[in-house]
Length: 261
Image (cartoon, rainbow, N blue to C red):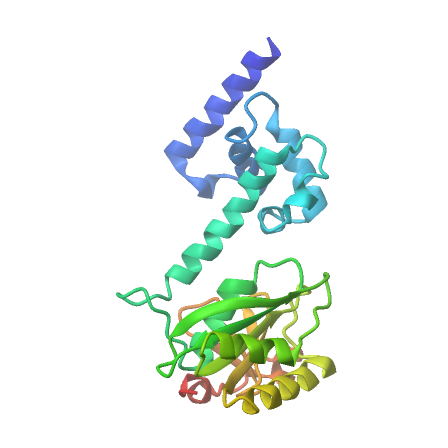
């Protein structure tokens, strides 16, 4: 009897989605619907609320590590993998948007690099450092995770970045890392690491084009010393001081971040 009630509810929310789309769903309802495709025989409403309470938001749920999801009572391996795949699918689609007709991604300016960095790292729940290898035309050859740390810290090893550059025969490197707190403001350690990586790469004849620190939908560019917002069709550009003071109406130096590396 209980199963038939749940089955009827599942059908109703699926029919609602087909008729009205996702815009008519609250976050817990949308998550509840997602879970019906991963959990065949259970009321997913309570699970949806439990997940949102634990991870804070729908984004937090689909970007949580599989091990973290498994800690929620009622979430098994299949459901955890299914939820995590939603976040990974979103990330992949965002990266695909930046490809040209040949499937290449060209990161020739700080704005282009910031969009790429945000697409790659904004959903990461742990601080992660990535080295992006570019050829002479600033096209992405590959990217590799240099280090994945804790919720607030990841070490940057200059020698490792130089080894990656040599192995991939990179013309230049973009160094990316994220602050899971959502604040792209670089730390003193970030400043020191940037110069150390730059020196290590120069010693092997490779250029460090930029180091971008991602926080939410913004990225701080060391090459321009500007915070670049990527959520809109046009970039939002602030000095670090203006960004920290939330002065969004200050003059923007858009031209500088649009210039080529």
